[in-house]
Image (cartoon, rainbow, N blue to C red):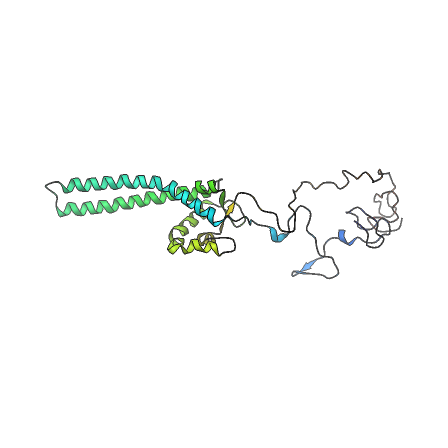
Length: 273
């Protein structure tokens, strides 16, 4: 860090220049902020290395509409096959029962009313089975560690909350219910994904969910993506070859802080040595 007065290169953590004792403003603690207004006379705060700016936090790797449509087709085939088999078997059993009873010589209007009631009960049972299978497939899988159904897994997308985290079973159930009863009306709920900023359909907006890709978060524009290190690296762990080897020196006579060779002012208190 170069001194603004004499131009000497100082270590980044010093508070005062070791050549002239000038205060190093860049290393001072940030000024207090009241009501979102920063006091004048201080340089603006700079983002720390390895961390994106605050405006870049949160997921922004939204899944494309095409990938979501193909995932929906795959899911429709996967869930439609067992529901179709169960519906066909139960419908065939009800039809065979009605035909067999109608062919009997003792068939009467009372038996016909019973058969009609059995048919409605059978269709109600099929609907309950379909709802339970759909709930187990969509809600339970989207709230699992996969965060996706088989179709979404194949297309490399997942369902998450607005922070990119895994959603709960209750939120996945709410999302499924809104998708089934509201988004399907003239496909308006699905069309909304083309015009919303985060490509949210109606069920995503109400349930507070996002459909994201699995390729992580892209780097924020203007800030290269750097790998965070814990703890931060020591700036003096590997000194350049042109740095002279450190020499033992006496401490500051005023505050006792250690001083590098050739320092005329203390980097801790700023007093003349």
